[in-house]
Length: 147
Image 1 (cartoon, rainbow, N blue to C red):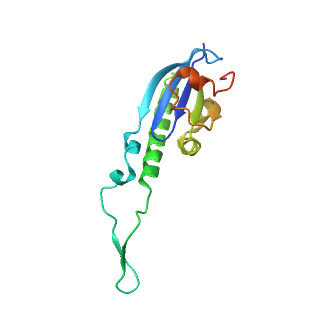
Image 2 (image 1 turned 60 degrees about the horizontal axis):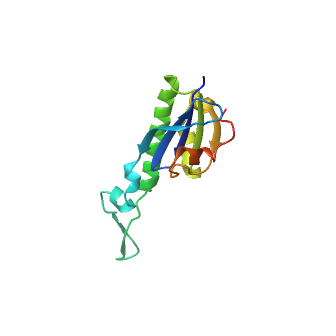
Image 3 (image 1 turned 135 degrees about the vertical axis):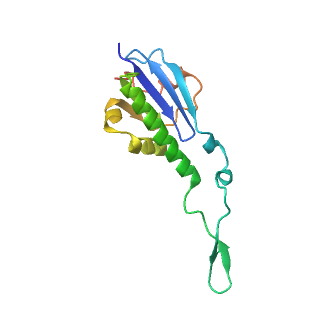
């Protein structure tokens, strides 16, 4: 029997659901990953005050940070999730993968997936489903057959 994992993710959380049926019924939640850094306000992610830059004459202004720290955290989370999924694939923990993610995070996740993991994906859904409470609510947003 083939095992299908459904990953419902955004930059702050990823939930892993599993089903051993092509229909995806029943689907059970197996794991939850939380990115606590993205639950903090942006100003708490930065440890240093911005530097001061010189303007014309005696004018001085605070320089904007060169990177968006929430974006950096989202990229880190996508990288870690993709690495973990690749290890699970290599260990044979699933045969098929369905990825449902917030559109921007889906792009970040795709960018970090290797060819083996990408080959295991049977469907992608560009929608944030990780906030839905029950597995059956997530299942309603997926194709009739998962593979």
